[in-house]
Length: 148
Length: 148
DNA sequence: ATAATTGCAAATAGTTTGCACCTAC
DNA sequence: GTAGGTGCAAACTATTTGCAATTAT
Image 1 (spheres, rainbow over the protein chains, first blue to last red):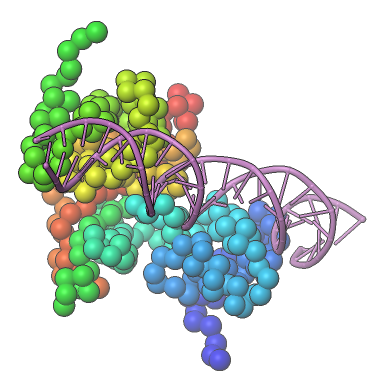
Image 2 (cartoon, rainbow over the protein chains, first blue to last red; image 1 turned 30 degrees about the horizontal axis):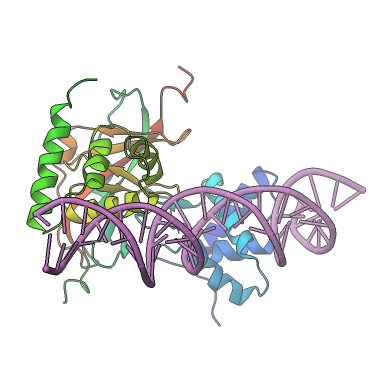
């Protein structure tokens, strides 16, 4: 219908590089799963991605979607997001950013705020952890759940 | 063997109050599940709690442990912790604190640091969320996984 | 007394695995 | 050509549900 947005293209290019570096073939499945995930601003579950992918690629296996997403996480091109629900959510945006979760409906939105990216890492923490990164989970209520 | 540590007693007292306020009977199961969870510094899963509780209370049902923990979360006396694994972890410490997760083995430790509790909440966020709280997930490597 | 909770058994949701066939390089 | 990926069916893990029996207040 129309040409692909540039941020999706960039993600695919990065994936191509990554796959080549790791001797992993870039299959149709991998390409389409990445295009699908990169095109979304929410943080879909594996199953939600599967549903969309299955339309463009009839016959894909749910298994493949799970495996490919896991592979992307291992490659570092996709992040797995913690959620109080049982299922995993995925995010193709691997730059440092944070999330707000609505206590009402569970919706998640990104929080991009430079001031939050300068947190001083607690180095040499008491329990002996070597801390390298962080992300903040904000908790609140979304506009819909506040009844606005 | 010995008397119960005071922080466990305090938790139980708080639970008693909470149950009374909500017209919920304080059953043996609830008491023991709370004692078990409050006595631990790691962040056990429902199943891990079940295993311990089952020793003191032969015949408890796994179902009950799941239900009771969920009830505690609803009461606000226990927190459910997000984890990249499929299973939920629980924490009887509901004061504001943060967590570090080891990328190697998945171990989680608490991070208590006053300086991290003064973060300015992004109010009236672009996406219309009303933000009321937050917690920080640090990511790093634990001493064991660093091979120390 | 009685309203709520518990235990059981069975169901469900999400995810993983083993293996034969297929495909990108 | 060949290493690695994919699809299928079945297994598995974590969690939930309906319901009759039980218990705290």
